[in-house]
Length: 318
Image (tube, rainbow, N blue to C red):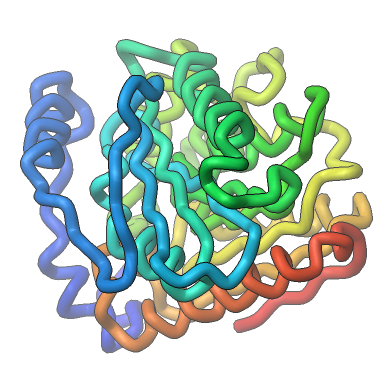
């Protein structure tokens, strides 16, 4: 994949994305150690706080001006093997301020030391914390959306499925940025030669293998381990899926959107030309990323204002 296929505005930021030595334990340790040194990024008009005693270190963004009784539970990415909530301070803070809702960023244990179901269990614990503290947060427990990016988007989709199968309030929406949904993509050796910027299929296979503690693409898969494997998607909440057209996950994201639509779920899939994986993070300040994020926020704001629109059609923006 040649750099010329990348949108002109993204080419400069893409050149600055550092190489990621995911294939060694030492490399992953070094990346996570570096992430641990990143200072918090404050957003004007938003109070950010930790939660004393909360499992896995929740990070809560509270807007000073409230506009809704809704909330967002956010899950960071990192291929299931790296990452911390601090990486998404800007997006979480901006979303809290724009929508006037609390945004609660979950933390979770990482593979391969902690494979499935440990990361998803941690996210489910975060969901239960939000539900248990709905009154303290000033939110309606029926108006909590679940979102995430990349592996966090995959965990968000799995969490929504798990929540749907349990008693209690269901998620109000699923807000998925280039979600990592289908381990069968990682099992396709024909994709290994493609030069997918930022996240390629060799890295994908490494992430899925670590998370599953098994080779991806196997015949049997535990419930919620790979959200695209779920056979029935009926009764899930409305979904927004955003992905670049140079992203390794484009096909699996479109396939999941098609299956949600066939199940009667309202779906918007926003496909950005010339955009590689995770561009809204590493090119956050570009106009193309800001337009993408604002479109996503507008959808989430409308959906939380009209939670009854959980069934309907689908459309795709290019």
